[in-house]
Amino acid sequence: MLDPKERGSSLGRKLHDSIKDWVLKEHGRALRIGVLEDNHMGYKFWCKMGYIEVDRVKKTYGNREHTVKVMNLFLK
Image 1 (cartoon, helix red, strand yellow):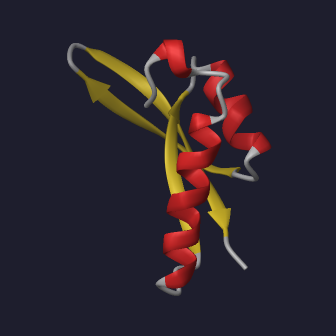
Image 2 (cartoon, helix red, strand yellow; image 1 turned 120 degrees about the vertical axis):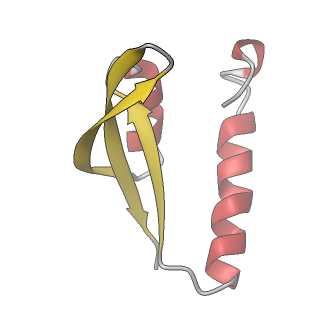
């Protein structure tokens, strides 16, 4: 989601926190994302953000089929 040059700058965390704050303000209860199975760094980031894997689905993007890890963050 971010330009690779911006990774590690806390921008992703700040964007996520802004979205989470907005969802909470609107009385949302959860956020859901999909992470490609081979995106190990992204998966690690989202786990650190508190997301948990709840499912895996097959999706086709272009000519390739990918396994997508579906992750939820349940809000309080």
